[in-house]
Length: 217
Image (cartoon, rainbow, N blue to C red):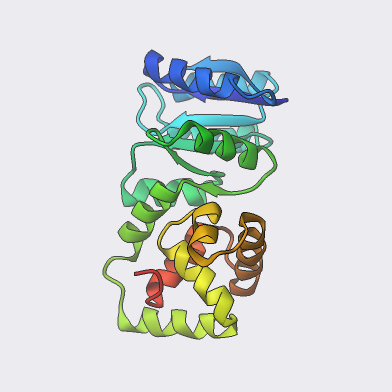
């Protein structure tokens, strides 16, 4: 079972997330918190696999809690729950070790996928969140950055560049597969290969590189 901690200062939001997660046979909500401080204490004292953290909370916000969890409970994989954060919040979460972002208005199936991915140590970025992040961080790119990105992409095959362009649009593996008539599993293999070739840690970094190079615009 994947043991999950749900953290949000709004009880109705927590209840909705708990209902969705409890519908899965392999996921169990074992704790809830109304702020980051409570979440850190629960993760420190209980067996938690995945912690869902809202960004905006009283007492201790999600990003501060993320940093604290990295110190006191590094075994816990953290997913940031958001309606979309500002640029510095995104950068702090990615650099702070977050397993990814999930938008609060995401479909229930996407939330389940995100939790399962995080539980096995995979990065998960909501397609909607990815698009917003890419657009925010890639805005105002320079010609020098574009040229440098294009040089890095030279090591990719034409098919890999095609898949990378879809990452730049913020598409999920399933949506990308439907776009280019490829199975989701095959797209996942291509994504792993692309990340390795480009030396990117996650698909957001790859998507940013794609946008810098003019792909997926």
